[in-house]
Length: 52
Image (tube, rainbow, N blue to C red; front, side):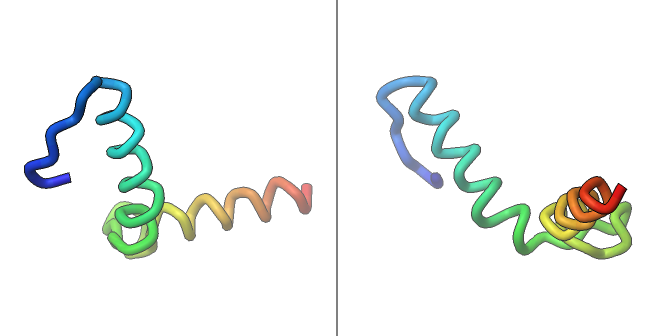
């Protein structure tokens, strides 16, 4: 996304959301999440909801 020129705001939003979902949430560890990724937390949450 660095130095990318988007034709529309919607195009930029789609690209940013895609980057967050495919890169950021799979790699970045968050101290407030016990040094786990957001995707790990979401998966754990979904599993707990299925069991209940």
